[in-house]
Amino acid sequence: MRDLTQPGALPLRPLTTGELLDAAVVLLRTRAGKLIGLGALLALAEQAILFPLRRLADVDDSFLPGEDLLAQFGVLIVVGFATEALCIALLGGVASAEAPRALLGTAAPRARGSRLGSVIVVGLVAALICAASAWTFLVLPVPLEVLGLVLAVMATFVIWPFAYGLVGLAAPAVVIDELSPVRALPRSVRLAARNVMRAMWIRDLGYLVWLFIRLGLSIATIAVVGIFYSSPSPTVDNLLMGGTWLFVNALAYPVLGCLDVALHIEARMRTEGLDIALRRSLRRGVATDSALAVPR
Image (cartoon, rainbow, N blue to C red; front, side):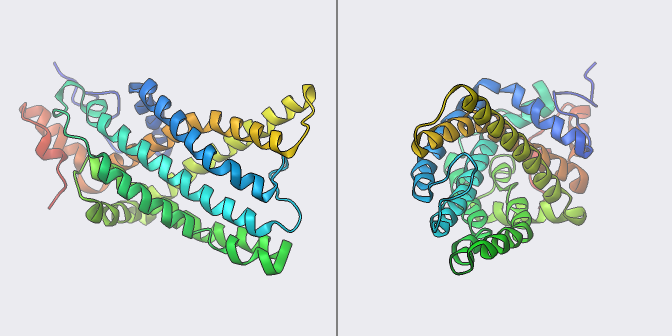
């Protein structure tokens, strides 16, 4: 007899915060090779974009810019926010295609056509929104120097959680809900804002957890390399830094993309009764397509 409480790898019920973070890893495991491989390619492309910007800002292993290069450092920060959001959105779109089977097992509907174009569109919009959340890095540090840099960091801490957290469910909305980019972005904001912005805060939490992991691994790797090898130039410092970030982002980005998918599904269960509709379809032995459809 089919287990209606656990037909797939993902639980068919609303989840706690800890269970959502675990669900992201579970979803990643269903297509680990594909998602981590794509994550590595995207992380490589990102570092190819960021490397010349790090050199222009003369960033060394302290992660700080050279003297009188705060404007260039601001460009690096803003572009970095954009590339991260784009990479995570693209991987969230890819992971979304695997979500119905991970949730429903053999009862999942047949795979639909590719939605890559729409995922790229919402990813680019999310990238622009996240970049805009750090716009103060482009204007405040230049005239105010260190004080401006501090103010830019403080302003970003206020704006970024909303910019990053509210648009993260757009890629799953494109693939799972089969919405156009125009409808997927407002859908993401609505889902993330429900229950006192629960999904938004959890998405921010997941990002911050992996940010600390990435920073720790990067600092530790650079420190270990420094014990055995003395860098002859800032260029080599930036190559080491870029290689380290490439390595850790190749795993972090797929996990964060999978977290977006888990949050999207869980938000629909918690606020739209998706789990109830799916259990009803499983019990009756009917197709689950209609249950997965967006409520009209």
